[in-house]
Image (tube, rainbow, N blue to C red):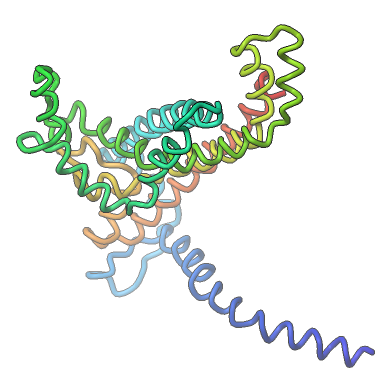
Length: 296
Protein backbone atom coordinates (compact mmCIF):
# COMPACT_ATOMS: atom_id res chain seq x y z
CA UNK A 1 0.00 0.00 0.00
CA UNK A 2 2.76 2.44 1.00
CA UNK A 3 4.77 1.53 -2.11
CA UNK A 4 1.75 2.27 -4.27
CA UNK A 5 1.23 5.66 -2.61
CA UNK A 6 4.89 6.55 -3.01
CA UNK A 7 4.79 5.60 -6.67
CA UNK A 8 1.60 7.63 -7.16
CA UNK A 9 3.16 10.64 -5.39
CA UNK A 10 6.34 10.31 -7.46
CA UNK A 11 4.34 10.42 -10.70
CA UNK A 12 2.47 13.55 -9.54
CA UNK A 13 5.73 15.21 -8.49
CA UNK A 14 7.25 14.37 -11.87
CA UNK A 15 4.43 16.24 -13.63
CA UNK A 16 4.54 19.21 -11.24
CA UNK A 17 8.33 19.62 -11.25
CA UNK A 18 8.64 21.32 -14.69
CA UNK A 19 6.01 23.90 -13.73
CA UNK A 20 7.74 24.55 -10.41
CA UNK A 21 11.08 25.01 -12.18
CA UNK A 22 9.56 27.50 -14.62
CA UNK A 23 7.88 29.45 -11.78
CA UNK A 24 11.11 29.47 -9.80
CA UNK A 25 13.24 30.51 -12.76
CA UNK A 26 11.01 33.23 -14.18
CA UNK A 27 9.11 34.49 -11.09
CA UNK A 28 10.66 33.62 -7.74
CA UNK A 29 14.31 34.24 -8.64
CA UNK A 30 13.67 37.62 -10.40
CA UNK A 31 11.52 38.70 -7.45
CA UNK A 32 14.17 38.09 -4.81
CA UNK A 33 16.99 39.28 -7.05
CA UNK A 34 15.23 42.59 -7.70
CA UNK A 35 14.64 43.00 -3.96
CA UNK A 36 18.37 42.52 -3.45
CA UNK A 37 19.17 44.99 -6.25
CA UNK A 38 16.92 47.59 -4.61
CA UNK A 39 19.29 47.50 -1.65
CA UNK A 40 22.37 48.08 -3.80
CA UNK A 41 24.02 50.73 -5.93
CA UNK A 42 24.46 49.07 -9.30
CA UNK A 43 24.93 50.51 -12.79
CA UNK A 44 25.13 47.45 -15.03
CA UNK A 45 27.15 49.35 -17.66
CA UNK A 46 29.82 50.88 -15.42
CA UNK A 47 29.75 48.76 -12.24
CA UNK A 48 31.52 45.42 -11.88
CA UNK A 49 29.14 44.19 -9.21
CA UNK A 50 26.35 45.56 -6.98
CA UNK A 51 27.47 47.60 -3.97
CA UNK A 52 25.25 46.97 -0.95
CA UNK A 53 23.87 50.26 0.45
CA UNK A 54 20.97 48.96 2.55
CA UNK A 55 18.04 51.36 2.57
CA UNK A 56 20.10 54.12 0.96
CA UNK A 57 18.12 54.09 -2.31
CA UNK A 58 14.82 54.34 -0.46
CA UNK A 59 16.12 57.26 1.62
CA UNK A 60 17.55 59.05 -1.43
CA UNK A 61 14.17 58.89 -3.18
CA UNK A 62 12.66 61.55 -0.98
CA UNK A 63 15.39 64.05 -1.82
CA UNK A 64 15.10 63.31 -5.57
CA UNK A 65 13.04 66.08 -7.20
CA UNK A 66 12.25 63.95 -10.25
CA UNK A 67 10.94 61.17 -8.02
CA UNK A 68 8.71 63.60 -6.10
CA UNK A 69 7.30 65.00 -9.35
CA UNK A 70 6.63 61.46 -10.62
CA UNK A 71 4.90 60.61 -7.33
CA UNK A 72 2.69 63.69 -7.58
CA UNK A 73 1.78 62.89 -11.19
CA UNK A 74 1.04 59.27 -10.33
CA UNK A 75 -1.27 60.21 -7.46
CA UNK A 76 -3.14 62.79 -9.58
CA UNK A 77 -3.51 60.25 -12.37
CA UNK A 78 -4.63 57.53 -9.95
CA UNK A 79 -7.34 59.64 -8.26
CA UNK A 80 -8.77 60.97 -11.54
CA UNK A 81 -8.56 57.64 -13.38
CA UNK A 82 -10.00 55.56 -10.54
CA UNK A 83 -12.92 57.94 -9.93
CA UNK A 84 -13.90 58.31 -13.59
CA UNK A 85 -13.44 54.60 -14.29
CA UNK A 86 -15.74 53.53 -11.45
CA UNK A 87 -18.43 56.11 -12.18
CA UNK A 88 -18.54 55.56 -15.95
CA UNK A 89 -18.31 51.76 -15.71
CA UNK A 90 -21.13 51.49 -13.16
CA UNK A 91 -23.32 53.97 -15.05
CA UNK A 92 -22.90 52.08 -18.33
CA UNK A 93 -23.45 48.73 -16.58
CA UNK A 94 -26.72 50.02 -15.11
CA UNK A 95 -27.75 51.21 -18.57
CA UNK A 96 -26.77 47.93 -20.24
CA UNK A 97 -28.81 45.87 -17.74
CA UNK A 98 -31.82 48.20 -17.90
CA UNK A 99 -33.52 46.16 -20.63
CA UNK A 100 -33.67 49.04 -23.13
CA UNK A 101 -33.31 48.30 -26.82
CA UNK A 102 -29.84 48.49 -28.33
CA UNK A 103 -28.01 47.82 -25.07
CA UNK A 104 -26.22 44.75 -26.42
CA UNK A 105 -24.76 46.93 -29.16
CA UNK A 106 -23.73 49.52 -26.58
CA UNK A 107 -22.02 46.84 -24.48
CA UNK A 108 -20.07 45.65 -27.52
CA UNK A 109 -19.01 49.19 -28.46
CA UNK A 110 -17.83 49.97 -24.92
CA UNK A 111 -15.91 46.69 -24.67
CA UNK A 112 -14.19 46.99 -28.07
CA UNK A 113 -11.28 49.22 -26.86
CA UNK A 114 -10.22 46.41 -24.51
CA UNK A 115 -9.12 44.23 -27.43
CA UNK A 116 -6.87 46.98 -28.80
CA UNK A 117 -3.27 46.77 -27.54
CA UNK A 118 -2.49 49.62 -25.16
CA UNK A 119 0.59 50.61 -27.15
CA UNK A 120 -1.53 50.83 -30.31
CA UNK A 121 -4.12 52.86 -28.39
CA UNK A 122 -1.37 55.34 -27.53
CA UNK A 123 -0.33 55.68 -31.16
CA UNK A 124 -3.95 56.17 -32.29
CA UNK A 125 -4.59 58.88 -29.72
CA UNK A 126 -1.31 60.60 -30.55
CA UNK A 127 -2.86 61.21 -33.96
CA UNK A 128 -6.32 62.08 -32.63
CA UNK A 129 -4.93 64.59 -30.10
CA UNK A 130 -2.31 66.15 -32.36
CA UNK A 131 -2.45 69.95 -32.13
CA UNK A 132 -2.19 70.66 -35.87
CA UNK A 133 -3.50 67.54 -37.60
CA UNK A 134 -5.56 65.88 -34.86
CA UNK A 135 -9.15 64.80 -35.39
CA UNK A 136 -10.33 66.24 -32.07
CA UNK A 137 -9.23 69.81 -32.77
CA UNK A 138 -10.58 69.54 -36.32
CA UNK A 139 -14.01 68.48 -35.04
CA UNK A 140 -14.00 71.34 -32.53
CA UNK A 141 -13.29 73.78 -35.36
CA UNK A 142 -16.16 72.36 -37.43
CA UNK A 143 -18.48 72.86 -34.46
CA UNK A 144 -17.19 76.44 -34.03
CA UNK A 145 -15.71 75.43 -30.68
CA UNK A 146 -12.14 76.09 -31.75
CA UNK A 147 -11.59 78.10 -28.55
CA UNK A 148 -11.55 74.70 -26.80
CA UNK A 149 -8.78 73.37 -29.06
CA UNK A 150 -5.57 72.58 -27.23
CA UNK A 151 -2.18 71.05 -27.68
CA UNK A 152 -3.56 68.10 -25.75
CA UNK A 153 -0.27 66.25 -25.33
CA UNK A 154 2.10 69.24 -25.50
CA UNK A 155 0.50 71.52 -22.90
CA UNK A 156 1.76 70.73 -19.36
CA UNK A 157 -1.58 71.82 -17.90
CA UNK A 158 -3.67 69.27 -19.82
CA UNK A 159 -1.31 66.49 -20.96
CA UNK A 160 -1.71 64.34 -17.83
CA UNK A 161 -5.51 64.64 -17.91
CA UNK A 162 -5.47 63.68 -21.60
CA UNK A 163 -3.72 60.45 -20.60
CA UNK A 164 -6.37 59.92 -17.92
CA UNK A 165 -9.21 60.14 -20.44
CA UNK A 166 -7.44 57.83 -22.89
CA UNK A 167 -6.93 55.29 -20.10
CA UNK A 168 -10.57 55.50 -19.01
CA UNK A 169 -11.64 54.92 -22.63
CA UNK A 170 -9.35 51.88 -22.79
CA UNK A 171 -10.34 50.19 -19.52
CA UNK A 172 -14.03 51.02 -19.01
CA UNK A 173 -15.11 47.91 -20.93
CA UNK A 174 -13.36 45.54 -18.50
CA UNK A 175 -14.84 47.08 -15.35
CA UNK A 176 -18.25 47.44 -17.01
CA UNK A 177 -18.37 43.68 -17.67
CA UNK A 178 -17.55 42.98 -14.02
CA UNK A 179 -20.33 45.31 -12.88
CA UNK A 180 -22.77 43.73 -15.36
CA UNK A 181 -21.98 40.30 -13.92
CA UNK A 182 -22.54 41.64 -10.40
CA UNK A 183 -25.84 43.29 -11.35
CA UNK A 184 -27.15 40.17 -13.05
CA UNK A 185 -26.38 38.12 -9.91
CA UNK A 186 -28.70 40.24 -7.75
CA UNK A 187 -32.01 38.38 -7.18
CA UNK A 188 -34.95 40.07 -8.89
CA UNK A 189 -37.07 39.35 -5.80
CA UNK A 190 -35.18 42.04 -3.89
CA UNK A 191 -36.20 44.68 -6.42
CA UNK A 192 -39.81 43.48 -6.42
CA UNK A 193 -39.94 43.69 -2.62
CA UNK A 194 -38.44 47.18 -2.71
CA UNK A 195 -41.06 48.31 -5.26
CA UNK A 196 -43.86 46.96 -3.06
CA UNK A 197 -42.45 49.04 -0.20
CA UNK A 198 -42.68 52.14 -2.40
CA UNK A 199 -38.95 52.52 -3.12
CA UNK A 200 -38.17 54.70 -6.15
CA UNK A 201 -35.25 54.10 -8.57
CA UNK A 202 -32.75 56.01 -6.43
CA UNK A 203 -33.70 54.17 -3.23
CA UNK A 204 -33.46 50.81 -5.02
CA UNK A 205 -30.00 51.78 -6.26
CA UNK A 206 -28.75 52.87 -2.83
CA UNK A 207 -30.38 50.21 -0.64
CA UNK A 208 -30.57 47.19 -2.96
CA UNK A 209 -28.07 47.48 -5.81
CA UNK A 210 -25.01 48.95 -4.09
CA UNK A 211 -25.05 46.65 -1.02
CA UNK A 212 -25.28 43.61 -3.28
CA UNK A 213 -22.33 44.83 -5.37
CA UNK A 214 -19.98 44.82 -2.39
CA UNK A 215 -17.81 41.95 -3.69
CA UNK A 216 -17.80 43.46 -7.18
CA UNK A 217 -16.66 46.82 -5.81
CA UNK A 218 -13.81 45.10 -3.97
CA UNK A 219 -12.63 43.28 -7.12
CA UNK A 220 -12.99 46.29 -9.43
CA UNK A 221 -11.57 48.63 -6.80
CA UNK A 222 -8.42 46.57 -6.27
CA UNK A 223 -8.00 46.14 -10.04
CA UNK A 224 -8.59 49.85 -10.66
CA UNK A 225 -6.21 50.93 -7.89
CA UNK A 226 -3.50 48.61 -9.20
CA UNK A 227 -3.76 49.80 -12.80
CA UNK A 228 -4.04 53.47 -11.87
CA UNK A 229 -0.78 53.44 -9.91
CA UNK A 230 1.11 51.14 -12.31
CA UNK A 231 0.50 53.43 -15.29
CA UNK A 232 3.38 53.10 -17.75
CA UNK A 233 2.42 52.51 -21.40
CA UNK A 234 0.44 55.73 -21.79
CA UNK A 235 3.21 58.17 -20.86
CA UNK A 236 5.83 55.95 -22.51
CA UNK A 237 4.10 55.78 -25.90
CA UNK A 238 2.21 59.07 -26.02
CA UNK A 239 4.41 61.67 -24.32
CA UNK A 240 7.58 59.98 -23.05
CA UNK A 241 6.95 61.70 -19.73
CA UNK A 242 6.70 65.14 -21.30
CA UNK A 243 6.28 67.91 -21.92
CA UNK A 244 9.11 68.34 -19.45
CA UNK A 245 8.09 66.10 -16.56
CA UNK A 246 4.34 66.81 -16.77
CA UNK A 247 3.42 63.16 -17.41
CA UNK A 248 6.35 61.37 -15.80
CA UNK A 249 4.94 58.65 -13.52
CA UNK A 250 6.62 56.37 -11.00
CA UNK A 251 6.69 53.28 -13.21
CA UNK A 252 7.96 55.33 -16.12
CA UNK A 253 10.64 56.92 -13.93
CA UNK A 254 11.61 53.48 -12.63
CA UNK A 255 11.99 52.24 -16.21
CA UNK A 256 14.13 55.26 -17.20
CA UNK A 257 16.46 54.74 -14.25
CA UNK A 258 16.81 51.03 -15.00
CA UNK A 259 17.06 50.95 -18.80
CA UNK A 260 18.01 54.47 -19.84
CA UNK A 261 20.34 55.52 -17.03
CA UNK A 262 21.23 51.85 -16.22
CA UNK A 263 20.80 52.45 -12.46
CA UNK A 264 19.27 49.05 -11.73
CA UNK A 265 19.46 49.42 -7.96
CA UNK A 266 17.65 52.75 -7.82
CA UNK A 267 15.16 51.68 -10.48
CA UNK A 268 14.32 48.52 -8.52
CA UNK A 269 13.77 50.49 -5.33
CA UNK A 270 11.29 52.79 -7.11
CA UNK A 271 9.46 49.74 -8.47
CA UNK A 272 9.05 48.35 -4.94
CA UNK A 273 7.86 51.72 -3.71
CA UNK A 274 5.15 51.49 -6.38
CA UNK A 275 4.30 47.98 -5.18
CA UNK A 276 3.80 49.31 -1.65
CA UNK A 277 1.53 52.08 -2.98
CA UNK A 278 -0.57 49.47 -4.80
CA UNK A 279 -0.94 47.40 -1.64
CA UNK A 280 -1.87 50.46 0.42
CA UNK A 281 -4.42 51.68 -2.15
CA UNK A 282 -5.98 48.20 -2.38
CA UNK A 283 -6.19 47.92 1.40
CA UNK A 284 -7.82 51.37 1.66
CA UNK A 285 -10.35 50.38 -1.01
CA UNK A 286 -11.30 47.18 0.85
CA UNK A 287 -11.46 48.99 4.21
CA UNK A 288 -13.67 51.82 2.90
CA UNK A 289 -16.11 49.41 1.22
CA UNK A 290 -16.33 47.17 4.30
CA UNK A 291 -16.95 50.15 6.59
CA UNK A 292 -19.39 52.03 4.34
CA UNK A 293 -22.96 51.69 5.59
CA UNK A 294 -24.29 51.34 2.03
CA UNK A 295 -22.33 48.09 1.68
CA UNK A 296 -23.30 46.67 5.06
